[in-house]
Length: 103
View (cartoon, rainbow, N blue to C red):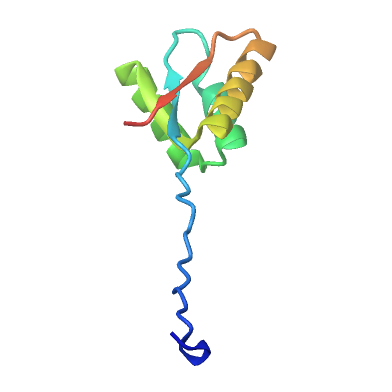
C-alpha cells in the first residue's frame, strides 16, 4: 500500500446511555383528625396546586383512604412528603404523606 492510500477508520461517537431518574408517587393518607381546610392549605403550599385540585385530592383521600398527590424524582418526592408531613406535626395534626416507586 502506498502513502497516498492511507486507510482511515470512521469515527464512531458513542453517547452514554443516560437513564431517567426513577419516579416516585407522593401519597396523602387519610386521617380522621386533621381539618380538611388545613390539608387543602398544605397541598396548595407544598405542591403548588390550585384550590379546586387541592380540594379534590383531599376528598379522594378522605373517601378512599389514600390519594396520589403528584409524581416526582425520588429525592423531590421524599422532600415534599416530609415537608408536608412536618407541616401537620407542627400544628399537632397526624397528617401523613408517604412516597412509593411508580410502577
